[in-house]
Length: 103
Image 1 (spheres, rainbow, N blue to C red):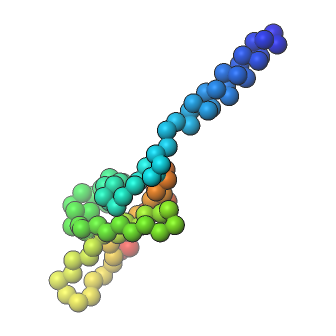
Image 2 (image 1 turned 180 degrees about the vertical axis):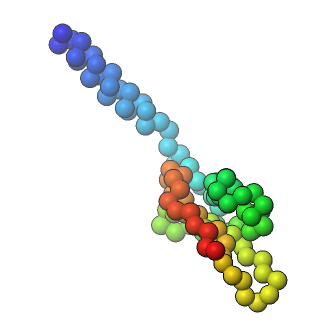
Image 3 (image 1 turned 90 degrees about the vertical axis):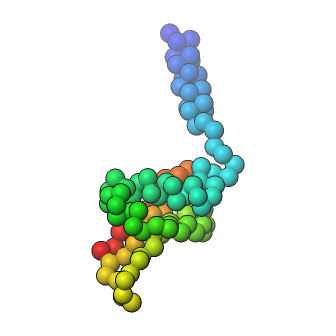
């Protein structure tokens, strides 16, 4: 019985170590192009393809390991109501930290 418990614990610890997997040295979001692609992928299902395409080009800036991806407003007049989509993404693991679209 003790051998069985020891094997179970060894198996559990081993699977936890293996389950951590590969982590790229530059993080899962190494550059601005990748950050923009991820942002668009999460924005389209929420706000619609037409809306998100109308906010291109998207700009990505990296600060303290977090990408901030912002859309562009195209206003026919000097002042626009609302705003463009903004997504923040963790460079290390590609988690979506926030997603907003001011109206």
